[in-house]
Length: 638
Image (tube, rainbow, N blue to C red; front, side):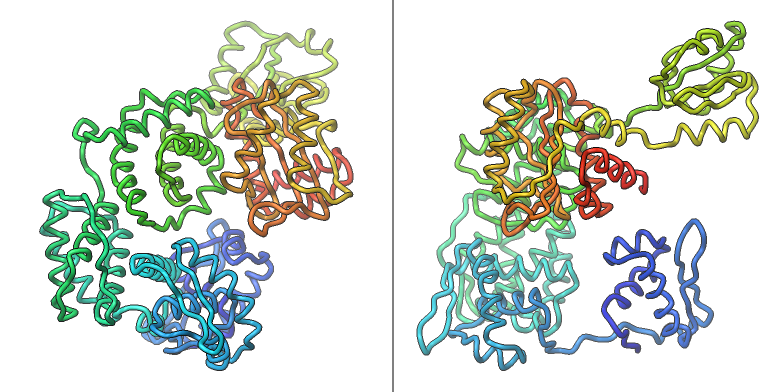
């Protein structure tokens, strides 16, 4: 057994045990520099060399585990966390406070918890707003009585949902310790419940995802603890009466009765039915679904996307099938306020912003006419389906192909031979025109990205590569260097950014003032109509457009601009954005329907800035020229 000197080394050790990773990838995962990664690997090697192993660096692939003594290395294990670890970080304290309030039958005093965890009462007092905010999402409230302390109030259903969701999240993040399990659920029931659930589902036609099954097992363990402690569920009923689900829920309720040793109320079995239905994997054809709500929602989403974003997905039978089968279970979850955590939500929002916005706009519009309200988690699941549909039918991963001019003074057969060689090796090259050497000499400016010539010619403003009818390997390599340059993002900068729409804010300004200022300017310039500003405000009210790393991406619901343009705003003082966040670099998008094919590439440009953590460098720009130079440099590092 070995104890690593810090948590980062333990994470690094875990990561490199399972796969070979390059320095850049490790730096991103650990949120450190590559220099720190090298130092950490060196420190890690000093520790594990005494166990007959080391991490070696291979060029082109990264760090790889090399084991010289397998028997000795097998004795190396991660340190076991203490059974009752004292929470140190704010996040750990918040989670422990939540579990205490959710499981305690009596009032709690912060003074007692502060003494137990060796922190000040003021520290816990500072953590309480986040605790209250989390509980409020489940309509749970904390009431304080002098001399008695604080106690949590709310429905039993809300208690269980909040506790199970929290444990599921901690379980996915590997933060749940044996102590927390013992404190919050019947931990000894987990393994028997897991075994029983596997056998039960194997005999049934009901299929759940691995995540869905884990959640259901955790909920059952929580239910066992609550029922045994005198907190049964007595006031719940459900309409779900499908025979297969009823059969599974009845047998599961019988198992809970056996484990608790008490009668199980009918409400317990009803809630189990709803949970199973909400997490069920559908494997049926669209023609088998006879539910007006699902059909109506799918039709509305697809028609909205077509009308407001120009993406026509209404004829995609596969997408319609996937959406119908997903939404059938989703409506059950929404109806009974069952929350399914979406561990990929932040990645979906950051890496697929276009598909996210398209889906969010459609669902938000639909929500105005129905009693349903979809959470961000549910919207995130829908985004995956819509995103796949967009990729199937549109060049959603838009790339600007390299444009080349062919200069050739020989006959048509030679020209065709060179074109065939180019097309076979680099099909992405677009030959815009073929001209003679004499015509080329008369040109003063070249719009294409580079020149391909069959003889040496003078360079103008673009590079030249010489290619014979039977090109050599060296010639093709030189051409490849020009072809493989990323021109998409620089092209977006060149096409949609300009000096006139760049500003630095040296005075404090609110988000509302900024929107008013920019939208008024765009309206006066004829880029947008008067409906644009209210749409930008409405989009921001739905969900914050903060992309991450201090970069915000405000825009309208739908493609409302007459002509596409990006307003770049740098705010050294920062602008309050969303819930407690601050934006320093703001890109307001006004995208027209004419540019919908390029819209994804515009979004991808900003995603790249976030991934490369470019906010500080971009913010240092004094004018548009320096901003553009820094932006191009940031993009070239990928």
